[in-house]
Structures are given as structure tokens and as C-alpha cells.
Length: 341
Image 1 (cartoon, one colour):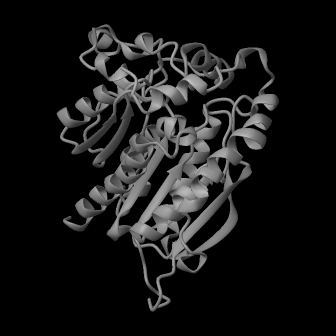
Image 2 (cartoon, rainbow, N blue to C red; image 1 turned 90 degrees about the vertical axis):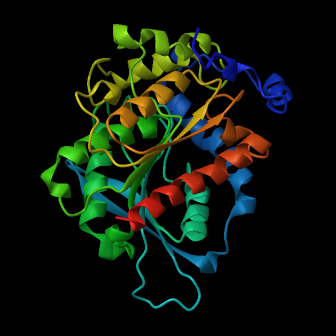
């Protein structure tokens, strides 16, 4: 049994909410466009309304939407810049580059927009929020490559973002977005383009860092949550398998399963947020352990008894409030590390 199995015992506050929560639809029988439209028309408005009360005043930040070139196409990005009262116009801030989640097949600039506006103001940090191309219309690695091209664009244009990379250059992502973030952090580590503009941290929220069919024998006893939580709400194993199918990814592709990389040395300090009822729980713990063994500082925050993505639908729960606060704390921890270098 996994040493973390007890974390699947349901949080008493969450239990009645889960009982009233509708069962996970059988996504596998639906066309991708139906799922994507459901997200935009039904799920996204709920997320945004849950977060609307926490929005900072509009005078505290600036929003700019634009498009940048990516591999024969254009990618929409949203820039958020703090505008504190009395600050000089040429003020610069650390930079936070964000990759949204959504099973690699849904999500957009609005997915985490309100959350990122709050982070921008509360932490006084410039934010780049991206809208990479989605599966199955654009199978792997299109979305990954878009995310990487966006990161390079941000690194090359800090002046357009009122950013100073020396104050902090942090990469973050949630769920499938954390999968892309972990992969592009490895790419960036090995890319001479980033000499002189290295990432100073990464945030991995409920990350997927190894395909469920790619577990090495030596780690199988540490990766039990995908079986233990195979029927968990919000994300169960059949849904995960459907995402894999639509993404058309090879399990052992190192850029989809970054836990399998030959070396993790030289990665930036990493803050993790892991959920107890999540199929991805144990791989998050294992990845944090592997990073630590390779000399990478880590911070791991754990939320017992809650499922993957719970904070999006149970936003008023004590655990979700703690989760959002500790995202800020994790970013601040990374910023404090950048200041000491």
C-alpha cells in the first residue's frame, strides 16, 4: 500500500459536496467539440463566478490581449501588469508564465484569468497567460510546443511585460498544464537560448509527470494512487485514458513523462500542490523526491481528502481557500529564492 493511501480518506467538509456532485460524464462517447463547448458554456462560468468576489480593483492592474507567432500559427496571450498607485511608469516586476489545465483538450485564457489577476496584484508580479492549441484537433506535441514558444517569447520581451527576469522568472501550470510546464522546464534547462535568462522557479499544481502506462518497475510500489483513486470524482481513470487517446501521445515520450528524464539536475526550485484523492498524487510526491535527490529545492503542500481540481468547483471550502493561499505562498517562496541569488 502507498505510504500516502490515507490521504484518500474524504475531507469531512468535502464529503457532502461530493455526494451532491454529478457523476463524471462518459466523455469517451462524446465528440471533442461537445466536451469543449460544455466547458465554455457550463463549467467555465461557474469557475469565474466562484472567483469573481476575489477580483482586485481594476485600477490595480493592466490587461492586454495579443497574439504571438507559434509554428505557422498565432497563439493568444493575456498580459497582466501591476499598476500600483504612485509607482513610476518604468517600474518592473518579476514574471510569472502560466499554462492552464483542462485534460490537454479544453481551457482558454479565461480558465484561470480571475485567479491570475489576483496573483498579479497581491504578489506584484507580471503575468503571461497563454492559450495553446488543444487536442484532439492538434495532437501532441502541438500544445507543448506552443507553450514552449510562448515561454521563449516572454523571455525575449521582458520590457513589453514591465518585467525584470532578475527579480524572478517563474513558470507554472495546473494539471495537464503542469505536465507541459514540467516538460518545458527541462527543455529550457538544456536550451542555450535561456542563457542569461534562466527560470528561477516553477509551480506544479496537481501535476501529471508520467503516463500511467509508463511506470518503471523500480517505481511501481510508489505509484499506487492511479489505481487507488481510479474511481475518484472529477478525474477518474476512464477519463484519463480518454484524454490520452485524444492527445495521441506515446506513454514513454520523455516530453510527456518528464519524470523519466535521464537527469533532473539543474531544474529551478519547484513548488508542488498535491491532492489526496487525485490519481496523480503519488507521482507528484515521487517527482518532488527525485528533484530533491538531484539538488533541486522543493516545497510540497498537500490537501488530504480532496479530489483533483476540487478548488475549481468547491471554491468556498476551507481546503480550497487554503489551496489558493498556498499557491501565492509557493510563488512567494520562489521569489524569495530569486532575490537571494
